[in-house]
Length: 130
Image (cartoon, rainbow, N blue to C red; front, side):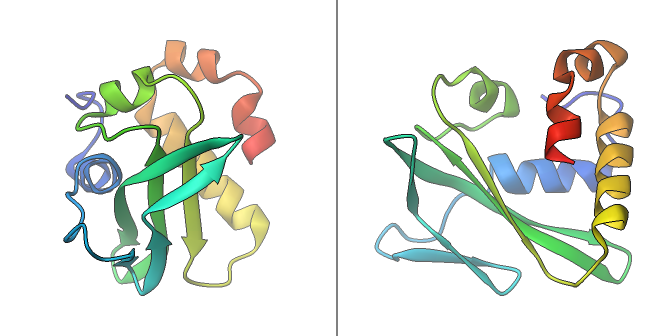
């Protein structure tokens, strides 16, 4: 279940990353937003599987395509977060934007979608990512 403070636009991104079923298993890769995402990746000695993909759009602007890799498939955000081990969110920018604009949008999006407690729990990880 998604937090109530998430509007429907953001739900589609989260659902796209966590829930969208992948195409036929026989395919070696998945296309999202014109970008190719392999079905598995190696991270810290572990094989992660592509859980789903999504494309972030705001009005007419398509910002990025993303793929979420986990140790096993999950159907909800809570299940994905609870999985032990490595995780990877691979983002592919679809337009050239200054880093300052991306980090501004990142901080704004995270702030809009997290409670104060969740933001505090992120600590300096958000700043390192930005």
